Each structure stands twice: as C-alpha cells, then as structure tokens.
Image 1 (cartoon, helix red, strand yellow):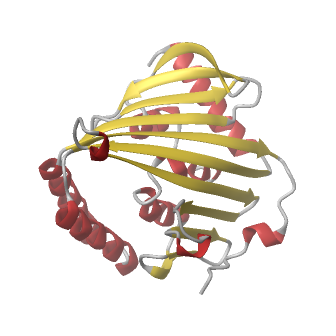
Image 2 (cartoon, helix red, strand yellow):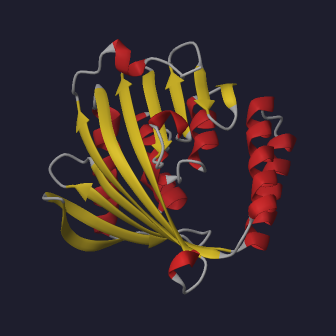
Length: 256
C-alpha cells in the first residue's frame, strides 16, 4: 500500500476510535445515468445524521429528500445501545439485529454505502488499516492535498474488488471524514448473481432471520427493477469529535 495512504488511513481509524463522542450531518448526492438524454438521468438526495457516545450508544438516520411534505420522504433510523440494535425504515418497518455490524450492513444499500462509513468507523468495525482499505478502497494511493469547503484534506483514491472507483478526503488536523465519492457501472446480471451468492453464504452461516429477510428482499427488489446505468455519489460530512451528545439525540424514535 502507498505509505502516505496508509498513514492517512491509520490517522482516520485512530481518530474515530479514541473519541468519546461523535456527531455529524451529511448530504449525499447520487446521479444515475441510464443514457445520453437528460431525462435518462435521475438525481437522488439523502440527508444523513449520526450521533454517538461511548461506550455503546449510537443513532444513525437518513431521509431521501422529496418534493412533498417531509413525512412522505423514504427514511430510516438505527439506534444501538447495550441491550439491542434496532432499526426502522419506511420500507420494512421495525427490525432487531444481533449486532451493530449486522444492522449497519442492512442499511448500507439503501443509504448508498458511503453513509454508514462514519458509524462503522466509530464502532471499530474495521480490524485495521488493511481491512478498511480492502472493503472500501482496494489498493489506495495518496492523490495530494485538497480543500473540501475550506477544510484542508488528504485526498485518497482507489478501486474496490467489485469495480467501484472511490475517492476519500480526510481532514488533516482532526482525522475527520470530509467527503466520499463513489463511481460505478451497474451490471444487472453480475449484481443479481452476487446478491444470490451472498444470500446463500448467510444461510450457510446460520445468520439470523432478520438479516436473511433483509438480503432476500433486496435481491428480489433488484431483480424486479434492475437496469443498466452508471452512478456517481458524493457524500459530504460535517462532523465533530467530543461534542456534547444528549440522550434525546440517541433515542430510537420512529414516527410510528
């Protein structure tokens, strides 16, 4: 691995592991392109928020911005404490998970994958720098220094094993995640096969029913709606370490 990239990722993981609390707001913009015509493009916006406090409290939420009242927007909520990992989505309703890893995995797809990166970092779900790189960047390289809305950042680039081109910006003075860009080309046949293989692996491993159900529904939905398209998502994070995080910001409070 590029030594500079390794140093930056090491600082990122250490910053999230050593903080007592973390909070952020983020905005994710994803553009789907199915052809050359303007009407063959679709843009999706997600509002994302994370609040976390040691030793084990975390709340993660996102909502897809729509043109109607906020109550109509597709959204999801995840809350983790010492007793449970609970989630609620407008698609699946209330769910319980056996671990933070399982819960974040279930919400990774609907939230565009990049959105759950900060909660996963805070929760220490990556074993080390190599594990983080393998799962998010492939073989990363340091691409220089850049400003992200005035913040001095290290810029890393990589391509994952599944073909996603990923760029990552990390604040130099704090280690905070500043921005992620992911580019991909969706191949329906390839993705459907991967989803089915993953479902078989989960069944063979005896994973809980809630996780199996979430993956099965994702596979069914994909097969019913799959099209070929290019996609690019950009997620900009506005985070802070060791800020006050009151209990109210950590509550599991679905609207129903």
